[in-house]
Image (tube, rainbow, N blue to C red; front, side, top):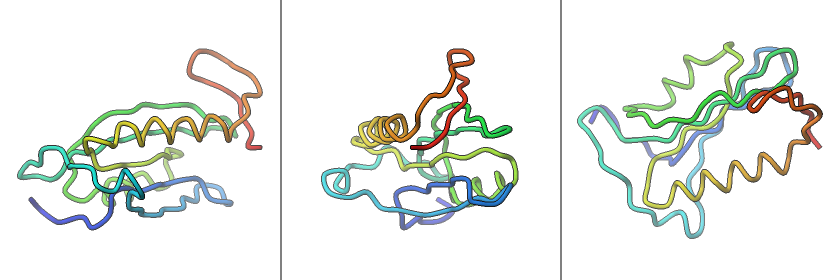
Length: 126
């Protein structure tokens, strides 16, 4: 493995300025903290990746996938200025539940102004 990552995930969210990204690392709390990490490889650990894209003030769910990262912060750094935001979370036997809770929180925090199609919505925050 290339490096040991001492956090469970990274949020990378839009800042107040155009093309600004606010990055914060976090550890799981409470019942999520004692999850068992999934298989590791020589290249790194397995992570959930959840991406949204912002264009002209509109938020689009881009995709979610799993990836192997030696250093997930390097992946996030390469997204600076791209208009892509989201989170990267270490995969554990409990992280699927965490991801579902996170998506629910986002859904409750965002009001749908207009549904353009199944995945593209115009939004504003409460």
